[in-house]
Length: 149
Image (cartoon, rainbow, N blue to C red; front, side):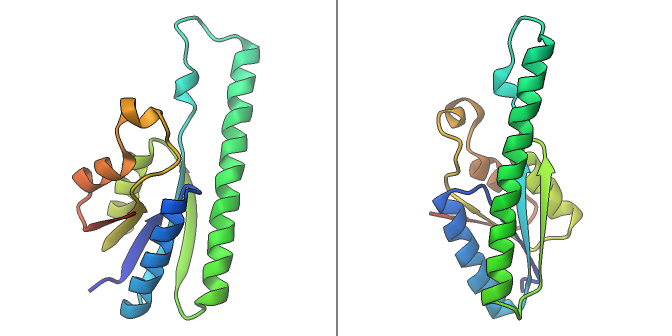
């Protein structure tokens, strides 16, 4: 039934639990597990005033730090998956963009059968304005979506 499962990771406890659920499903169906982390550009730092070179430099540094943090999360999950479930095929990717859009497009591009993600990420108050990533993925995805609490 499932041959390719996409798991969105952001470092939250909900995402970690989603990974555990995805591994259980993948083990049952002998499915490929694809780990994905998305780095959203720091658009919240926008201002009505033209950015200065110092502001641009700070934003670039924040973006690179966020990217490195996400890479660490992915690598850790990938290593743990390979160590504890060597029979499962797995891959990982880190991409830039709006998280919900990237998850949905990756699922389409990679012919994913199931998307698994946590019900709440690390979004905090941003979600009040931008909407929940899991809600948007569930609305826009072309394949089944499992949202894990």
